Length: 113
Image (cartoon, rainbow, N blue to C red; front, side):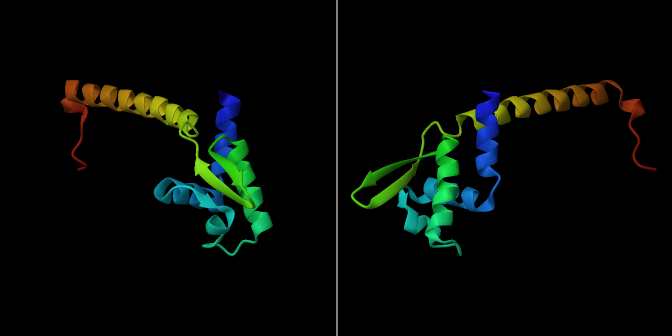
């Protein structure tokens, strides 16, 4: 899973690609031309960004005639979600221990004076 996670982070490292993912999440499948429209990107540059997202397993594409349509993969961000959930749990556990230690030793807390 580390290699898969690295690929997802790499794919999402670019602001254009993150915007394209957001667009697909919010509005559903779109053509390359629709995804390129909000940016000052040519279609070849847009295609390169979309290929990175597709190789990262975040999106998928289908071709019907001359039009290629891109969609979010349902499981495309699962590795990222798992990684974030594990780190969130670790942080919460640490904060819970800190709160317990502070509650057990209130005399060691200063009021900033």
